[in-house]
Image (cartoon, rainbow, N blue to C red; front, side, top):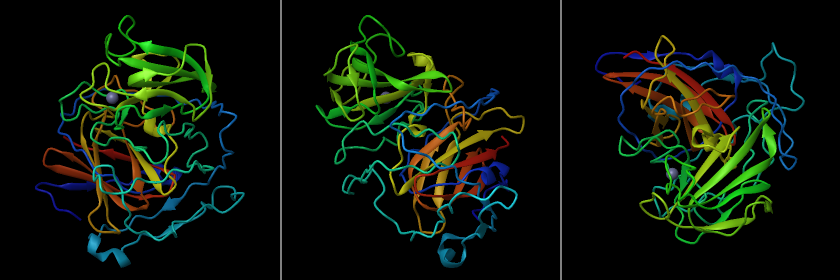
Length: 380
Ligand SMILES: [Zn+2]
């Protein structure tokens, strides 16, 4: 275990036993931040109505993990924690859930190194970590393109205080890349935002398209927004299917270069109703998502706390992010999170949150195409 100047805490999260996890690696953006406080209480009522085109989901039983004493990554061969499946207190599963028996080998992970090949994307029949998981959206870029999200400016980030808190994610596609509908629905916005503000102000997303999808989530309409387009290729009122081309990417509005800003909005088509798209986009088949919540002992959320997810069963791969910058960033009903990291390779990881001179850690499994929840309480 890494030593710190003052102290280190390892908390065991009971919620880990309620969810199974997922996988692989992304490379990093760590930003400095100042923890502030705010309490968030979300009573979860799940009445998800999946899209008719969504794969049939199987509910998987919880995994009970036994954490072992953290060991250096160099001891990887003998350092794997033991775990048992299924939870004997739960009804037996209809079919055995996948165990992490896949070979854990480093594979090209991320966008940040441009020489690496992109992950391939095959829409899978998704298993679920939790019954109400809602990876209902395809990637908005065709396979072979930049199908992954930018890790330097994720949802909720200020990119180290440089920018306003991000209400979406970026796909760093070049000019005139075909942008695809992530699910079926009706076009409700196709044009520019010079007269009507769909973002923080007018002329923010430039040319944009908004789709209202054909399904509800917890009784609420679901919208996706595609910003900074060179031009939309659809009209308001038009019906689209998943994978239809709806526009060409660009750099209109407030954009420092070509990319496509992507948002998920629930309930209303408004800037205040955005949620983390990483919890909606289908994960790559060999990768998982780490989602978590970092709080102070009184339950207050920690803002812009640096989070590092470092692999400990294989040398030196890590991903990093910061917790959401403030209370305007909405947490998912299911996870109540304040950070998420996608495209994490399957493996065993140490999650570290730094608060001043202290580090607080948890160890987690990440599984292919699954979500791993981690909760860490820090003391300033
Ligand atoms: Zn953006």
